[in-house]
Length: 400
Image 1: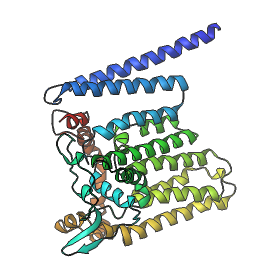
Image 2 (image 1 turned 90 degrees about the horizontal axis):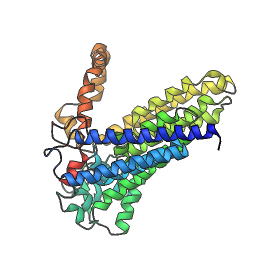
Image 3 (image 1 turned 90 degrees about the vertical axis):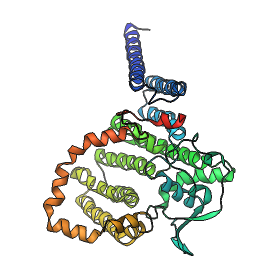
Image 4 (image 1 turned 45 degrees about the horizontal axis):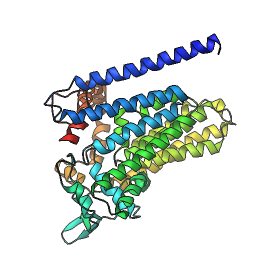
């Protein structure tokens, strides 16, 4: 072994030890800064979670220093911390998770587009009794629903995210189908659905980070944000949207680095954006990123001009989909009651904004004023104590 090799090993070990030490210290400070009887009902259980977090973090760091593989390390982080969210997050606690659970169950039966029907005096979508009676925002220690056997009696449920595409629910639907096939307890409808979503998220993020020719580390960091992993470990279709967005961006970065682009590349990227746009219409704006690709990257100018055609196709399809399907589907949910109570009229709203443009612009100029409020609310995602800011209180519900 040469002196240079020895210095390199010492340098790597120093970085590794510093990273591990820093992670442990920061984790301990973050935990005990909110450690009190009010915030921790049964401290010994929180201690077990703390130990798991530290061990998972150390494993992730050791793996990275051993392999120097960003995408594999990201997958490990997502899985290790995601599985904690799967079991510790309260029942149906992620945003609109119960409605996503309903749609996932419908998809698990092979129904691609839920049918809104009326039976007697009741209208809704056909799902099962166990899903309809699942509670919200409570732990498995606060209900006996979790230990009951799955009841597949068909019932009508008012809302099911009818406007969302079926492919965004394939992963959790597999988990729900498996829970029914094995005749497990009710809680496994939720847990297996979450696990399958988490596995899909980790896989797609890993592929995207591996394949992207640039910005690997920033992409990995965003994929491993606590709130990203929290969504990934839920039934929400946002899990598919987030992870598939990484795939689309990785392909875009590939186009940015390429010097021989053809219409095939444009078609592939346009298709990726369309899949996302139908899932959530705001993601249609990703098609605009085509215009950041240098013109000289294309084989010839006609391929570059296809970008304008792609823009027209994406916005045309999403506008048609929104007007003739998505908006009508929203009326088949609890939202229609809210719309009616608040006199919501999209056409009149657009006319008002067009006639009074400043009323549409000025609120955007004050968006920064909302940041402190939003950060505080997100940091208290699962708790009700105002004394618990800047930290996520999953544990309280787990031990409740």
